[in-house]
Structures are given as C-alpha cells and as structure tokens.
Image 1: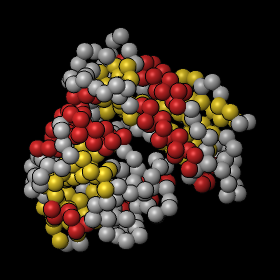
Image 2: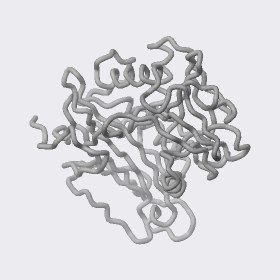
Image 3: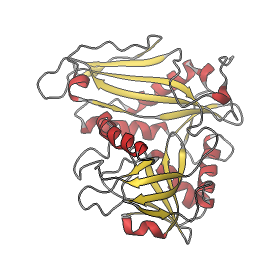
Image 4: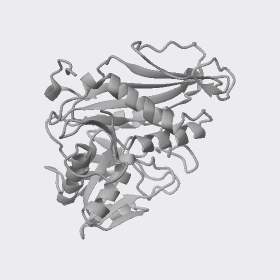
Length: 341
C-alpha cells in the first residue's frame, strides 16, 4: 500500500479530506447496515434536530503506525462506551459498541494511505459523531439520527515542541452540578468558545474551570483533564461527577501506577492546593499531555517548580511511556491496542 504524497513532517493540526468515511442512519427504531462513502457532504433539513436544539455527541481517537509497521488504534472500546453514555444522556439511540469498533476499523483500513509513517510525529485523527436529522420544531428529541466517522491526518498538536502553558482560573462555569459536563456533547464545547477566546485575548493559553457550586475545587479545562504531581512524586487527578472521563487520563493513571510504580490518587483538588504541586499537565487525545508552567488566580501567579521551559520529569516519563505503548515501543496492557492491519 503506497502512502499519499503528503509532507508528513509539516502537517498541522487541521482538516485534510480523505477518501472514505462511514455513515449509518437510524430510522423507524433501528440502525441501517452502514456504508463507506466518498461523499464528504452532509445534507440536512433546515429544521433538523441538530440545528435547532444541538442534539449531537462526538468522540476523538487516533490511528498510529507502530514501530513494527502495523496500523493500530488506541482503546477504541472506551470511546465506544463513552459515546453510548453521551447519546443516552441526550436521549439519542446508542450506536452499538461492536459496530462502533468495526466502523473505526473500516474507516482506518479504507484510508490506510493517509496513516502517517512511524517516526513522522503525525497520526491519523478519527472523529466519530452522531446527530439528530429529522425536522424538529417542538422541544423534543429527534426521531432519526445519523452516525458518521471521518478521519484526517494531523501533525503534532504543538509544532516546534511542547512549551509549558499559562492558565487562568476562569470566572465562567463549564458545567452545572447535575448537567452535562460528564458527556462529550457539542453543546458543552459551544459554551466554552467565548471563555477560551477571552482567555487568549487576555494572554492566557487556557482556562482552569472550577466547580460551579462552591468555586473552590479544580475541574478541567474546556477540552482536557488535569493531572498533578506532588513534591513527593504522587500523581493526583481531580474527581468530580461533572468532569469528562478522559481516556488518556485513565490510561496515564494506569501507566503511573503499573509501569512507573507511582502512587496515584483520584480525589477532589482544591484551589488552595495548587501552590503545593510540583508539576501540572493537561491530558487528552490531541497532545497526550500538555505541561502547565503557571496558573494565574485573578492576578496572583502560581508558578509550578517544573518551570516554563519543558515538561516536568514525572510528566515526561508519563508522556514517554504512554506514547511508547501507543507506538509499539513498549508492551501494552491487554486490550489497549486494536490492530487494523
């Protein structure tokens, strides 16, 4: 299989249209068989449920070329589980787990020429998503839905190397205590756009959201979970029912405990503790871990001892170990790597 003529080392993190995508429609109470198609366009009624009431959920995962030349994806079963939870919360029909994994496999295999070669620093990003398609004018769930997966080759999330970020503690709320913060719904990301644009205008890289009830506990950013390292090398991550359950975060906690022998805690993290941590990172599919060097609390700077020049030592070990597993350099736990071809 010959790869596409793409300058892999200079790819940005953006959309490049590939040859095939997967489409399945839900109608009259069931999903159809689903097909691969070359048509990248979505045609909808002007009154479609997704356009009127934002009834849409999505996922994000990657395909890699491993050191030994295989094409694999990383823990797609957990993406399937999370999408099922998201759909159920928005009164959408769940797309079955086995079919989700099969659709991922079909899309990657059909676009194998777009999977970047090992060592290029690039990957194939996959976006499964589902949305209400039939006309809905009264406030209610749609009756018909479409599930799709497209893929696009992407370069490293941070071109030119990873530099520690500066965050601000945000005055906007990300999620209500009994709301939708724990699911991957488009509406959660739409409401975060103003806050992130405002943060960028103020000179910050990202927002640190607090719990909306007491505003004393750390939750997450608009698109990533937090991971902290204490001065005695314990890995700590915030626990809250309104945090999105990041697959990368869960994998990193396993790596910390089982591969690196570190103590791990998932618990409530208070703002007043931030000054006592040695390292901080944001974890998610796109960048795996993005180090944080400084947190600004309404003018008060909290500078992490790991500094503003590079990843802290423990964060770096976590990053190297997890990416080593994904790329096949380090043996993976059973079930983590799904081989496409």
